[in-house]
Image (cartoon, rainbow, N blue to C red; front, side, top):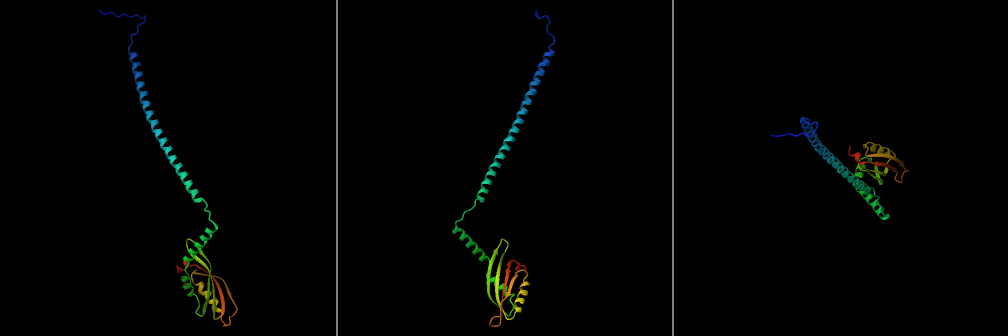
Length: 196
Protein backbone atom coordinates (compact mmCIF):
# COMPACT_ATOMS: atom_id res chain seq x y z
CA UNK A 1 0.00 0.00 0.00
CA UNK A 2 1.27 3.41 -1.04
CA UNK A 3 1.08 6.32 1.30
CA UNK A 4 1.04 9.94 0.06
CA UNK A 5 2.53 12.31 2.50
CA UNK A 6 1.63 15.94 2.16
CA UNK A 7 3.61 18.19 4.45
CA UNK A 8 2.04 21.48 3.44
CA UNK A 9 -0.91 22.85 5.24
CA UNK A 10 -2.58 23.80 1.93
CA UNK A 11 -1.49 21.37 -0.72
CA UNK A 12 -1.59 22.46 -4.44
CA UNK A 13 -3.92 20.22 -6.27
CA UNK A 14 -4.58 22.21 -9.52
CA UNK A 15 -1.83 21.09 -11.91
CA UNK A 16 -3.56 22.54 -15.04
CA UNK A 17 -2.47 26.03 -14.15
CA UNK A 18 1.14 24.86 -14.02
CA UNK A 19 0.91 23.25 -17.47
CA UNK A 20 -0.81 26.31 -18.94
CA UNK A 21 1.98 28.49 -17.56
CA UNK A 22 4.65 26.16 -19.00
CA UNK A 23 2.95 26.09 -22.44
CA UNK A 24 2.65 29.93 -22.32
CA UNK A 25 6.36 30.25 -21.50
CA UNK A 26 7.18 27.83 -24.34
CA UNK A 27 5.08 29.79 -26.89
CA UNK A 28 6.54 33.09 -25.74
CA UNK A 29 10.04 31.66 -26.09
CA UNK A 30 9.23 30.27 -29.56
CA UNK A 31 7.73 33.61 -30.64
CA UNK A 32 10.83 35.44 -29.35
CA UNK A 33 13.05 33.04 -31.33
CA UNK A 34 11.08 33.69 -34.56
CA UNK A 35 11.08 37.44 -33.94
CA UNK A 36 14.85 37.47 -33.38
CA UNK A 37 15.42 35.46 -36.59
CA UNK A 38 13.26 37.85 -38.65
CA UNK A 39 14.95 40.90 -37.08
CA UNK A 40 18.36 39.38 -37.83
CA UNK A 41 17.48 38.87 -41.51
CA UNK A 42 15.97 42.40 -41.72
CA UNK A 43 19.10 43.94 -40.18
CA UNK A 44 21.33 41.88 -42.52
CA UNK A 45 19.34 43.07 -45.55
CA UNK A 46 19.55 46.69 -44.36
CA UNK A 47 23.28 46.32 -43.75
CA UNK A 48 23.74 44.97 -47.28
CA UNK A 49 21.74 47.88 -48.75
CA UNK A 50 23.75 50.44 -46.76
CA UNK A 51 27.07 48.84 -47.76
CA UNK A 52 26.01 48.86 -51.43
CA UNK A 53 25.03 52.52 -51.13
CA UNK A 54 28.40 53.32 -49.52
CA UNK A 55 30.23 51.50 -52.33
CA UNK A 56 28.23 53.40 -54.95
CA UNK A 57 29.05 56.71 -53.24
CA UNK A 58 32.74 55.75 -53.05
CA UNK A 59 32.70 55.03 -56.79
CA UNK A 60 30.96 58.36 -57.46
CA UNK A 61 33.52 60.19 -55.29
CA UNK A 62 36.42 58.51 -57.12
CA UNK A 63 34.85 59.38 -60.47
CA UNK A 64 34.35 63.00 -59.35
CA UNK A 65 38.01 63.22 -58.31
CA UNK A 66 39.09 61.80 -61.68
CA UNK A 67 36.84 64.27 -63.52
CA UNK A 68 38.24 67.15 -61.48
CA UNK A 69 41.82 66.07 -62.24
CA UNK A 70 40.96 65.75 -65.93
CA UNK A 71 39.50 69.27 -65.95
CA UNK A 72 42.57 70.62 -64.16
CA UNK A 73 44.78 69.10 -66.84
CA UNK A 74 42.60 70.61 -69.58
CA UNK A 75 42.55 74.01 -67.92
CA UNK A 76 46.27 74.17 -67.31
CA UNK A 77 47.52 77.05 -69.33
CA UNK A 78 50.10 76.11 -71.89
CA UNK A 79 52.98 78.55 -71.66
CA UNK A 80 54.68 79.20 -74.98
CA UNK A 81 57.96 80.91 -75.52
CA UNK A 82 58.05 83.86 -77.90
CA UNK A 83 59.59 81.71 -80.62
CA UNK A 84 56.93 78.99 -80.20
CA UNK A 85 54.15 81.61 -80.35
CA UNK A 86 55.64 82.98 -83.58
CA UNK A 87 55.86 79.47 -85.07
CA UNK A 88 52.26 78.77 -84.05
CA UNK A 89 51.05 82.00 -85.68
CA UNK A 90 53.00 81.18 -88.85
CA UNK A 91 51.51 77.68 -88.94
CA UNK A 92 47.99 79.08 -88.58
CA UNK A 93 48.59 81.52 -91.42
CA UNK A 94 49.86 78.69 -93.62
CA UNK A 95 46.76 76.63 -92.85
CA UNK A 96 44.52 79.59 -93.67
CA UNK A 97 46.33 80.19 -96.94
CA UNK A 98 46.12 76.52 -97.84
CA UNK A 99 42.36 76.49 -97.23
CA UNK A 100 41.94 79.64 -99.33
CA UNK A 101 42.12 78.93 -103.08
CA UNK A 102 43.58 81.76 -105.18
CA UNK A 103 42.80 79.97 -108.43
CA UNK A 104 39.15 79.60 -107.52
CA UNK A 105 38.88 83.24 -106.44
CA UNK A 106 40.43 84.48 -109.69
CA UNK A 107 38.19 82.27 -111.84
CA UNK A 108 35.14 83.41 -109.85
CA UNK A 109 36.14 87.07 -110.26
CA UNK A 110 36.77 86.77 -114.02
CA UNK A 111 33.11 85.94 -114.54
CA UNK A 112 32.04 89.39 -113.25
CA UNK A 113 34.70 91.57 -114.91
CA UNK A 114 33.32 93.58 -117.88
CA UNK A 115 34.85 92.85 -121.32
CA UNK A 116 36.58 96.22 -121.66
CA UNK A 117 38.15 96.10 -118.19
CA UNK A 118 41.63 94.85 -117.32
CA UNK A 119 42.55 93.69 -113.81
CA UNK A 120 45.86 95.26 -112.75
CA UNK A 121 46.29 93.73 -109.28
CA UNK A 122 44.49 91.63 -106.70
CA UNK A 123 45.50 91.94 -103.08
CA UNK A 124 44.11 89.71 -100.33
CA UNK A 125 44.03 91.94 -97.25
CA UNK A 126 42.66 89.42 -94.75
CA UNK A 127 41.56 85.77 -94.68
CA UNK A 128 38.99 84.78 -92.07
CA UNK A 129 38.83 81.04 -91.49
CA UNK A 130 35.99 79.84 -89.26
CA UNK A 131 34.77 76.31 -88.61
CA UNK A 132 31.96 76.83 -91.13
CA UNK A 133 33.61 78.65 -94.02
CA UNK A 134 36.45 80.80 -95.33
CA UNK A 135 36.09 84.41 -96.39
CA UNK A 136 38.56 87.06 -97.51
CA UNK A 137 38.80 90.81 -97.86
CA UNK A 138 40.15 91.52 -101.33
CA UNK A 139 41.32 94.71 -103.01
CA UNK A 140 40.97 94.74 -106.81
CA UNK A 141 42.67 97.42 -108.94
CA UNK A 142 41.52 97.59 -112.54
CA UNK A 143 41.59 99.75 -115.67
CA UNK A 144 38.43 100.45 -117.62
CA UNK A 145 38.03 102.02 -121.03
CA UNK A 146 35.39 104.40 -119.63
CA UNK A 147 34.34 105.59 -116.22
CA UNK A 148 31.18 103.47 -116.55
CA UNK A 149 33.23 100.28 -116.24
CA UNK A 150 33.38 100.68 -112.43
CA UNK A 151 29.58 100.86 -112.22
CA UNK A 152 29.19 97.93 -114.62
CA UNK A 153 31.57 95.80 -112.57
CA UNK A 154 29.79 96.71 -109.32
CA UNK A 155 26.42 95.76 -110.82
CA UNK A 156 27.86 92.44 -112.05
CA UNK A 157 29.31 91.67 -108.62
CA UNK A 158 25.99 92.39 -106.92
CA UNK A 159 24.46 89.61 -109.05
CA UNK A 160 26.88 87.04 -107.54
CA UNK A 161 24.36 85.93 -104.85
CA UNK A 162 26.70 86.79 -101.99
CA UNK A 163 29.85 85.32 -103.54
CA UNK A 164 31.28 88.85 -103.68
CA UNK A 165 30.08 91.70 -101.48
CA UNK A 166 31.10 95.14 -102.71
CA UNK A 167 32.64 97.46 -100.13
CA UNK A 168 34.50 100.73 -100.67
CA UNK A 169 35.15 101.82 -104.23
CA UNK A 170 37.30 104.55 -105.67
CA UNK A 171 38.10 105.98 -109.07
CA UNK A 172 41.43 107.62 -109.89
CA UNK A 173 42.38 110.21 -112.49
CA UNK A 174 42.57 109.16 -116.12
CA UNK A 175 45.76 107.37 -117.12
CA UNK A 176 47.95 108.57 -120.01
CA UNK A 177 46.41 105.87 -122.19
CA UNK A 178 42.96 107.40 -121.63
CA UNK A 179 41.80 104.47 -119.48
CA UNK A 180 40.16 104.99 -116.08
CA UNK A 181 41.81 103.25 -113.10
CA UNK A 182 39.56 102.22 -110.22
CA UNK A 183 39.76 100.27 -106.98
CA UNK A 184 37.09 97.98 -105.48
CA UNK A 185 37.22 96.44 -102.02
CA UNK A 186 35.35 93.13 -101.88
CA UNK A 187 34.37 90.49 -99.38
CA UNK A 188 34.84 87.10 -101.06
CA UNK A 189 32.77 84.24 -99.56
CA UNK A 190 33.18 81.04 -101.60
CA UNK A 191 30.73 79.08 -99.45
CA UNK A 192 27.92 81.41 -100.52
CA UNK A 193 28.96 81.01 -104.12
CA UNK A 194 28.41 77.24 -103.89
CA UNK A 195 24.71 77.89 -103.30
CA UNK A 196 24.25 79.47 -106.73
